[in-house]
Length: 44
Image (cartoon, rainbow, N blue to C red; front, top):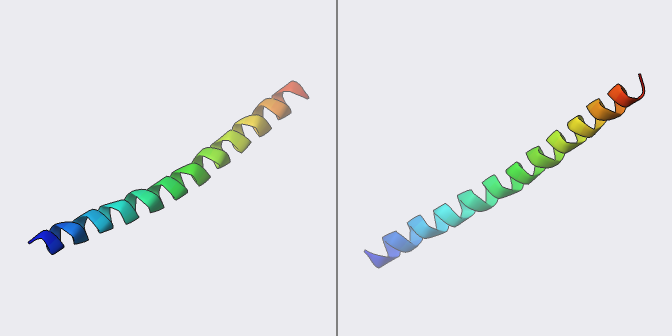
């Protein structure tokens, strides 16, 4: 029973790790898009 719980915990940690990585990438991408938009707007 405890090994089963450990498996679930490991899976959860892996998932959160992957999501965290992807989320960071998405965040950086959004920031770049926003800075590009403001840059374009300021250059008009």
